[in-house]
Length: 460
Ligand code: GLY
Ligand code: MN
Ligand code: MN
Image (cartoon, rainbow, N blue to C red; front, side):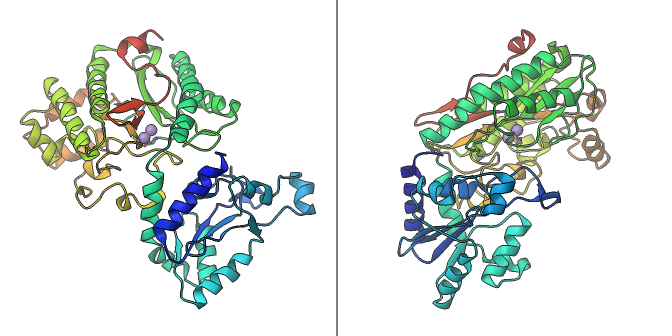
């Protein structure tokens, strides 16, 4: 946990910006894997962690924005719990560490909600993502589960996002030290062992093992695949063969649950073929350009578009596409090769605050999300501010099914040289991803640098 003043300040600021009614922030519960007592690994809700910091299931955070009253609802361990899971530090003790004196039994929340309802006070809550939270909120508020999403508080979403999007020095330090000490080690081990004959699951397992040996979890399931053209491929059953490219997209989360999110692409046995090197150098140049251009006041949308132009230019130089670069990108032909956005905010969530609905905070009145294939997946469009932490992750992929579909539809035949692509159906893809903090006048790459240039990779 951070020190108590940080949580007190965060809640005070939230109450001031909402200004009327009550705020409910339910924490997560343990979800059964196959029966109730055999649960999935518990992950606390990130909004609860941000304002109430306590990392245990079955708690509800409550703020009265007018009286200033703050409560944590939760049941202290009884003898049954002590027998099965041991003596715990009490919720009351933990609440003290975040500056809250009042802890009440879990079901008392209903009394507080009913009191607020009886005098028509607004009850603000965020979009619940686990089904059991939706059901619980529906019960407490007497709203049908299917209707819950229509009652979330847009004011609360915007106020929470405005606070969480600016990372403090302590938050950036959490990510930095996790990156330097754990995610870095995960990649060093993976690069050393990625030789012909190894399996993807041995590499993924080693990487996850390093996170677990450091007493932390992964921020998201590892992507470790020689089929890198499948963007979020979570299968790890291939055996590495000579001249294949391996994409690894992985990151540990810190003890306080701040995410890291890195991608590296390298050849099996770490020796690029000329064909691989040509594509790799384009992606690397695009990624370095993006990082170089990050600074406060620049819309991330513009950096995305300019990066796509670098990718298009590189592909044009290799003969994959032809024509005017501005036209290729504005019409969306480049998206056959890079069908995703340049990056996203990162913090307590790997896609930070995605549960709040990205269009509520990642775009604004001046920059709306595009509806064009590829650019539509950009998860952050608005102007950058000091304190944002985001990913920069351009890529080039050769997706045989997409190429064949567009070719059959005669799509962008003026721009795309389909015959050249026939030789790339087994190429896979290249993505390079780093996490970047926006500073007062530019940007800073988070953590100890993980090998990225062709030379650095080949010398591993
Ligand atoms: N690891 C998921 C992503 O890069 O967005
Ligand atoms: Mn990412
Ligand atoms: Mn990633």
